[in-house]
Every structure is written in C-alpha cells, then in structure tokens.
Image (cartoon, rainbow, N blue to C red; front, side, top):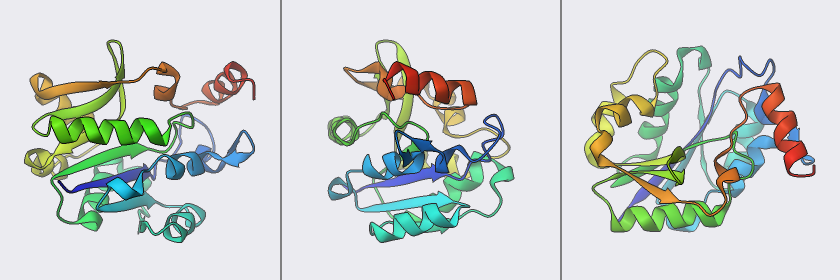
Length: 194
C-alpha cells in the first residue's frame, strides 16, 4: 500500500499574530518538530507545502518535496491541492499540520500501520472521544479533497462521511495539542516544563 504525506505549513498564522511555525519551541523552530514526526520510511512521497523559504529548504534537505504556496490567504484548500498534486499517485494520503510540537514520529508511524489495516476508513488521531490531526484519507476521497474551497479543509469531507471515520488512539493526549494563539504557545511550554 502506497501512502503519501502532505505537511500543511502554509497557514497565515492570523490568530497567532506572527508566523508561529518559525517561532522557537524548546529552542527549535516549531516546524522542525513536524518534519521530525514524518516517518519517511513508511511513505511513498512527502510534500511540505509552505510559503516560507526556510521551511521549504529544511524539507528539501531531508529529501522531501518542497511545494511553494505563495497565497496562504486562499486557505487550506489550496495547500491541500498543491500537496496532492506534488505527491502523485497513492492509495492514501496523511495530512499533517505543522503546529503540533509534541506529536511523535512513533505515533504517526502507528497511525499509518492502523490505516493499512483499515484502508477503507478515514483515520484520524484520537484520545478517547477527542479527534485531531493527522488524518489519513483513502483514495476514494481524493476528488472531494481537491474540490474544497473557501476556508474549509479536510474537516468538511470528514463531516460528510462521519460513518467512515475511525480513530487511532494515542496514549498521550498532549500529542494532539496544536498551537493556534500566543496563549496556547505559552500554556503548552509551561505544561511541559519548557
């Protein structure tokens, strides 16, 4: 089974007030944690979509496909389409966001293995009833993902197919935490003694 990855690192960070992905978290730029979490050995292709030169350069240095999104204001659908075009043919695509610095590579690898056994489902990470990212979509949903527009991302496809969603359960729910605002950033660092 061929599974590709699209790392979505092109957001405008409007709620954060500055580009959060290059902000340091525990002495490293936040986007580097997302690159570390990608288990490249389990993926047929990895596209990193961003408007930031330093993120694209770091992706290329790791052998990933750097994809420029010079219009982050167009929202998640453009990032999704650009990433999907870059990775080419696959049986499934895992979509990751770049603002979950506690997400571990082993957890992402576990989710990929779980999807391989449940390949007709949309597989999201979860902790109990809580659902989060990354999310893996099988090929049958690719056309719907490419047709997205406005501000709605893959969540719109999930909402239309709730009965097809399965959760890959994490032991540590903190891995699901993303950083949307400056207060999220401060809280996450404090909670983890950073």
